[in-house]
Amino acid sequence: MVQTPAIMSFLGYLLNYTPSDPLMAYEVRQVYLSVVDVFNSFANWSFVIKNADEKEAKKKEYFNTYLPFMFGKFEERLKKQANRMVMVGQCLTYADFGFAGFAKATFLAKADEASYEVVYKNTPLLKAYLENINRIC
Image (cartoon, rainbow, N blue to C red; front, side, top):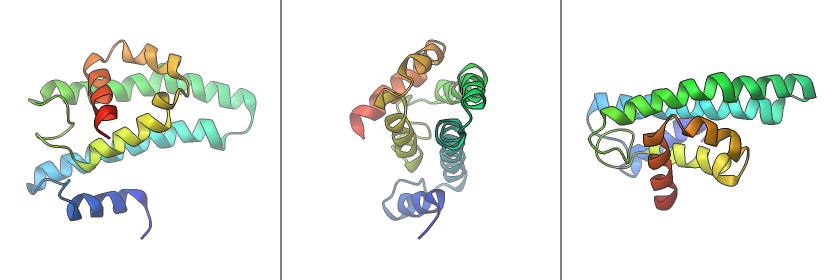
């Protein structure tokens, strides 16, 4: 098997972490792929770019523009959720596991923790969600 999103979708289906409702299953995939986008953007400036000036410029863009935008979208999603401890529906899905993986690989691993904290101050629901997910996963 190859391609993490395909594997996560497969395991979500196999292990019952994908809703049976097609629209909710779409929402889980949409959230998961958004998390993949956020991680890929992080990985690009962190690991791929070698030029120090270019790396610093991409890092600033990530933390000042891209991450606040994306975290704001996740915050909006949580505001619409009855259960604000999961991204879609009422139960954990593979999107939640994906978010936990991203968080643990980056700011929960103390990588740029202070930079993430600046973004967090504007997304209290997301912060609570990720703290909860970190305890579960």
